[in-house]
Length: 127
Picture (tube, rainbow, N blue to C red):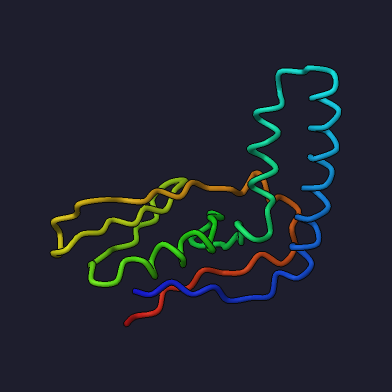
């Protein structure tokens, strides 16, 4: 199965840029005041990076579709399976089928993208 992202996320990207800018301003104020929450703000800023995150919905959860597709491209020569269970998507991979040597887990990001109207769908194509 080859993952593919279907949909237009233009409005959502603009919302992500605005949210990222708000968080940067909040981080600057927190750093000036010496507030401890600066680390958590830095993590949130990374989540709203348009170049690193493209939220995509699959089976009721939202994961970073960009990270998934980039990772799958690097698995040339490996077998893999994609499983959605609970609040995460897991990619098991290895040289031979059912003898997995590694895994990638992408957790649900729905809480970060509530109110985003045009989140694309993650579709699995049979190869």
